[in-house]
Length: 579
Image (cartoon, rainbow, N blue to C red):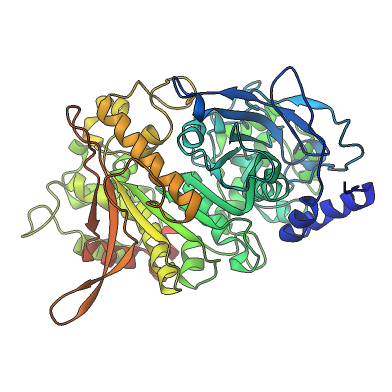
């Protein structure tokens, strides 16, 4: 048995701080720790700590039992002097791995402070993660791993809303992890004062610290740190992109694959806006002068909550050398990112959720200028006019838009949710990455659709199917009800595609309940005289309740979609939209 000394353990922690994840993982995994037991449930021994989890099996499926471990710290509590600083590593000193205190890990950790905020709801001490593993998996199983980042606009949300139980029970060949990270001003307060005495984008750095913890320890749960996929939707999808372009691609990634759903963020604030927000926050809290950061760190949670409720704070651009050195669109366009195997896509009508009004409010182009572009105040008249040409008016010959609302919604869709996934897919395939796939989700969130049918396949529709609408309970942050037959079939099919990609880089490799093969984003279409490169994506759609199949199909991405996305992702336009 390899004895890991205290000195070696400290060195391991220091290596992690310096970003030498691969070296750390190799050394740490060479140790064999004794098995521990607890009346609470199955125990995983990490040497410096041990956690007792809880076994659960789907109804009537004992062969699909999953063990859950929750509320596992991955960094020091970011409180007191560590507020507004990058996450600090835990003390992972290994003294006697045979006598490690066992923590009860059968439940979730507290959510990070939300917006709207209220004292007593959520916690500043929230840097924890959760693990789901097949109950039969053990150290040495080396199963691929999925790490999920929740959405919520970077201001709210929690892992509690996105349980990975179904993913692991359906595919017993993967391990699941979900991560809590700091939100709003506790995660993203920017400005010169923070840069001088703190760290920018601490919420994104929390995510990276969790990924580094996975590199060091997931093998103890049966996972393989060399086969990690990250995934997320909306702000979680944006997190996936930001992790992929982090440091402008200059640092190795602690993951291999990425799934970005309905990438949602922006406009990223300018440096002037960041300073104005910092001034508003410090004024609300009551902190001024040269010791403003010290004051903010010692401020009461009541004062912080007040500032959260008066300011919306999201990721900032740090400049050269920073975690986020430039706008993600620019980093992708300039090739400043690491290669990953990739799935990217969106819901058919994501844009309707954020278009700025209801159908009856959109009657003219002026309504589009007034309502839609209120979110994008830097967009110029020239850019708007070009957009109106690319999205022809409803009364124009051949226009695909029946109403001005449809027209505005598609613009909203492309600016925020659909063009960045296409942009990254194009760049990855240009680099020769083969495992690149695209999707369009085309079945609505049933509960939200009943409330607002005009929104169609609205934002978060994919989440309804991917995170177990049958229970109503675990997904506490969203509205769910029990699936009907066709919804259940689509859910099973989609989870099969997602987990197959996690396991192999190919969404159609596993024996998933799918009736078609999900073809890559780019393929060749031969004709009589030439071979044409085509862009395709899968369209995930439920069937009828009487049939036995979904309506999932493969479609070619229309050329006008590519043209519009090239426009929105061009450098002069992203300078205005700041995505």
